[in-house]
Image (tube, rainbow, N blue to C red):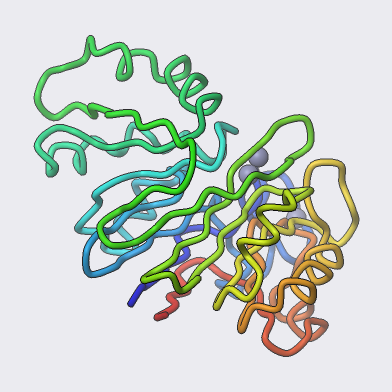
Amino acid sequence: MLTATFLGTGTSVGIPVPLCDCSVCRSSDSRDQRWRSSVYIETPTASWVIDTATEFRLQALRANITRLDAVIYTHAHADHILGFDDLRRFSSANGDEMPIYASPETLERMAHTFEYAFSGEARFPGYVQPVPYTIEGPFMLGENEVVPIQVEHGKIHTLGFLIRQQGRPILGYVSDCKIISDQGLHDLAGVEVLVLGTPLKMSRFSHLSISEGLGLISLLKPKRAFLTHLSHDVSHVETSKTLPKGCSLAYDGLRLEL
Ligand SMILES: [Zn+2]
Ligand SMILES: [Zn+2]
Ligand SMILES: [Zn+2]
């Protein structure tokens, strides 16, 4: 049992984009309005977010997040970490500590960006107190196995995540990605639900295009697939018409019960 709530499904600038008057940025369809990408996972034994996006406080209020046992980071690009300070209340609720899981590179960059929290200086009650855990392989959150997926994202490496329950691959989440490693492709094959970040229709060096994403989906054969990290290139209604069966665009607030 697992519930995934998309807290944000937008690319790094968010949609609408300031100073843009394209049809998607002007759209009144709420599914075209996208905060920065993040997902909230709830299970009977643990609940966590993948990334703390720029709008994390607003996202947590909108999704009514009342329990947060940990945070997992894909990488340290601004759109995925800048909501970090909004973990304060959740840290307090956990006895003033918040477990943070990330790769060694991401933890290093987080410790640099949020030096006041990671240095241990800001230790008064009510402040976020990160407890870093280096991801070096699969790890457990409650009774869920979280398997890191090695991914190339332009010039840097990021992590995607596969969640397994009792050995069953339930959810794969790979937001910022150009190339998934061979081991990652092996781990994700046959997953129930696959979420892939595909900001644009055209190909870029750092991200999958929509057609490249669809190619991976047909290779990995999930039961259902969702595209996220979307730009203003992507109209929800128009682009949805072009997607194959079993594949949909994610949107902010979408909740999946798996
Ligand atoms: Zn991103
Ligand atoms: Zn626009
Ligand atoms: Zn990124």
